[in-house]
Each structure stands twice: as C-alpha cells, then as structure tokens.
Image 1: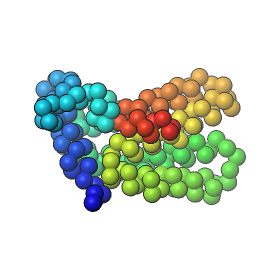
Image 2: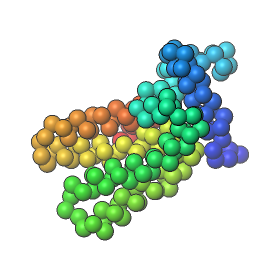
Image 3: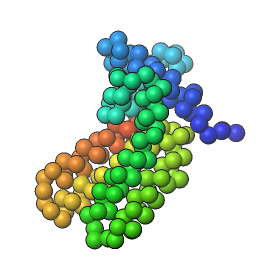
Image 4: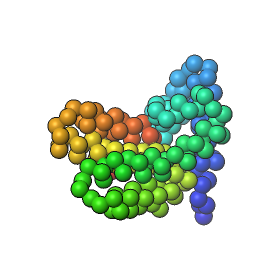
Length: 166
C-alpha cells in the first residue's frame, strides 16, 4: 500500500527545505529536531548535503532547482554512458542504443521519481567506468581523477547501497 512518489513528498522535499534553510543561515545541519525527538541529519547519507549538484539550490528557488535536478539525471546518465561506450570500437548505432538504454532505463526513470537519491548515486556509474577504462587503456592520470571524482559524487549522491554496486 505504498504509492510511488510518497517518499519525495513526505521525506526528501521537506528534508531539502530544512537543509536549504540551515545553509542559508550559515549553519551545518547536524541534527534534525523535526523527526521524532530529533535525529542525526548530517550522518544520514540520504540528506546528500555535500552532493555537488545541490549548489543549484543556492541560486534558484527550491522547487525549480528540484525539477532541474530530476530532469537532468537521465540526461547526465546518458551522456556519461556515451563517453564510456565511445572508448570502444563500436558502431555509432550501438553507442547510441547503449546510451539511451542506460540513461532512460526503467531503473533510472522510476528511481528518480520514487527516491531522488538513488538515481543521483547511480548516474555516475558510466563515468566511473569511463575513468577506469580510459586509465587502463591510456595510462593518463586525468582518467584516474575522473573515476575518483565520479565515485565521490556517487557517495555524496545519498544512497550508499547504489555506490557499493557502482
């Protein structure tokens, strides 16, 4: 009896409001006094306070930044998959099929609507693979840096289970 999307309305959007309010007051949200008798907030991975793309919340109204982040998740996932598949000697049709299949897969689309942090963590998988494969093929240090930054973004995305899968 759990309709899809309830977590967004009941958990993630209010937590984002709390985070934005605390950061606007130049306070790190360590503790959320509004859950039960208070709960650790910074220690909760799903608060994704340090996720780099959350910088949009500083410049845009919350609802607009939220919509942009939901909208760009499959696009970013598709772009990163395109980069990864381009490392191999594949035909363009195969690259585009793989790009669309990953970026707009059921997993990416459903989880971006049900629990925003799952897709935030998963979309970095192809970029991690791009960095690893590029480093193994070319031995250039910047590929290694890309893999590390992408993995860090997956961790900061807010769903550690998906990062373990990555």
